[in-house]
Image (tube, rainbow, N blue to C red):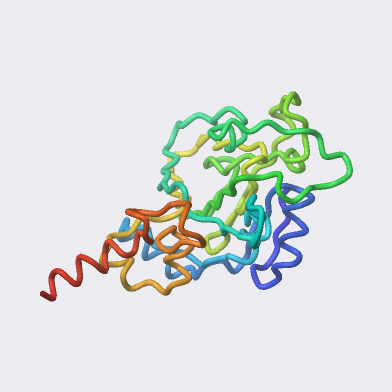
Length: 241
């Protein structure tokens, strides 16, 4: 089954992801906050775990230039968000890797995980206690090390059973699936969150950067050759005038 490690120990979290492909984070969020999200049905941004995510997803390179080239790096940004409700009677998904949307193929990593192999990660935050019976996510440990031709068997998957306040962080190359709900209860789950522009204005610079409103360099994710947050600032200036 997935290892359960405190978010306060990022080094162990990184080691677990490298060996298993995913890890359950304890102490990820406050139970009262999760209950408020469920009650309001209003997604909100959870702990920013930049150190761990960027360990796996930060890209660094030296652009080709015949003189004066300097290294540039790009941190991870939020690419998709969703709130899921695994209702009664919902069937399990087929086992899959999330990075198929980028047409990723994989070579076996028999000597251990190689940084730079992944282009994405997933973060699942349960709104209720999750168990196999109510549709807990299914996860195949160490499948991020498999060759692309290796096909998973259902019996290889374990249920990621979590309590409210925990979260499951995993590599996009890790084989997993949404579980089946054989109970009469729903299982809400925030995979990341969505905010209005008014709320984005109140975030710290670190949070705005995590969601892609502030850029590492001027070439990736720009809007009119500027940080997307500049759209909000321009609008604010127009209103002041």
